[in-house]
Length: 333
Ligand code: AHN
Ligand code: ZN
Image (tube, rainbow, N blue to C red):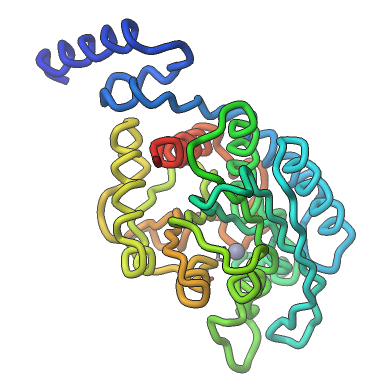
């Protein structure tokens, strides 16, 4: 770091001290751009988010049709209600690729439901029924805990819900926990495999939004946002459907000094909930999901393995993603 940069930082901090009307706790944010001084973005609590991830994982695997799934769904709805959201549950029977009838539940928490200007935040809350990507074949039919694949995004959004209760942004926010994302075709299934086998809850919501004629300015999907030092590249479909939202989010991350996580380059494509939200509901939605060029694994080193447990979760990562999303939503006018 050169001295010119140091002088500039101390100047910005001075300015922050002089003008901030309390609560500007994120020094990194204050130092990197003056805009943070004028818009008071609350501080995301990474430890709180971590506890929300753990609370879900403590139920066990959240596989549709299991009692753990039912119990965790009740917990999530209750949490959103505790934070003052208007909660809607969508119960739907969805048919999996193998014919299994899934008793699915999308859970939506709406803040300022009367506000016409809205932002939609998504994560899937179910966990995969099979560790079919596990290096050990004996685990290929074991359900996974999905600490990163599922619980991480939900944990970040529960913490954002807690923050919204304390300080409302200018726009209404819908926190949407989608079900049955991860019941897609087993790797050992011999037969057709199509993208529509995934993201069943998202497809249902996109066709039947929780309020008639629902619309949002944009959407952000969080998937596997709690690992150890992941890199988030601008995901392919997000870039196709919602380039300006990718720009907003990666710029926000840069301002906050999180450009070590948010790499401002094009990444690969992910068949994920946002694809159906874009295609079916027409709400421009991006996906924050890890991408690891040249690492030899997809999304997360423990993706769809029995090792996707709490050891796979890093509070600092949850914090970087949570603060970045809050930076975006609190700056919307
Ligand atoms: C597929 O595996 C086809 N898409 C990645 C979507 C996903 C699965 N996200 C979490 N688990
Ligand atoms: Zn998955």
